Image 1 (tube, protein in one colour):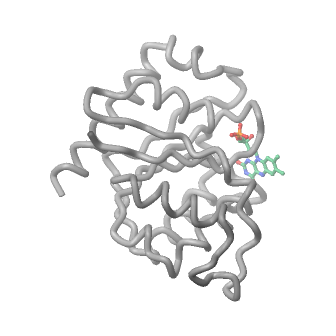
Image 2 (cartoon, protein in one colour):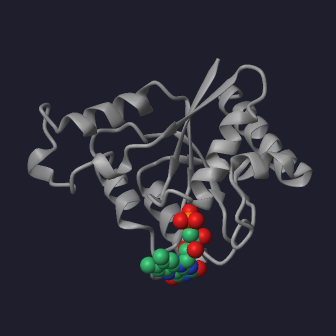
Length: 176
Ligand SMILES: Cc1cc2nc3c(=O)[nH]c(=O)nc-3n(C[C@H](O)[C@H](O)[C@H](O)COP(=O)(O)O)c2cc1C
């Protein structure tokens, strides 16, 4: 079983990025499991002084979720031409601990406009030595569509794009 952790950069209840990841979790091919991480807002503000063996519990749980996963899917909005603070904060907790070293990452994007955030996220992940899998990274325009995960799954074009991206991701992971 290939386990993937999906992280949305949006804390909004109706977030299109979270809906996209929820849909992906419901469309997994055989042999693939996606867990959607829902605790970004529980991570305290990153402080290197707290980044010790007794780091905050929420941080330890987050790292453990990553250790259990062979790959990570990130889907994020753009805020003021940047990565949302909650997502950048979560990544900052992983810089020294190493869960992202060589970790395969697929970048999903629910808005084609968010090019600054995508570029910035790519730069951060690259310096953390994550392996970005381009074949599994997709932009699916959901802005203004008001679709929940069931609506996303009901759209045959979108659901096929998601399925193909997740399959390509699992293949890249399993090919080493
Ligand atoms: C405070 C704030 C700042 C934003 N700044 C940008 C921006 O700089 N560029 C952009 O393309 N969209 C920007 N947006 C729009 C969001 O990125 C967009 O609506 C996104 O699809 C929301 O994702 P979500 O549905 O997952 O929450 C901003 C939204 C908010 C709330």
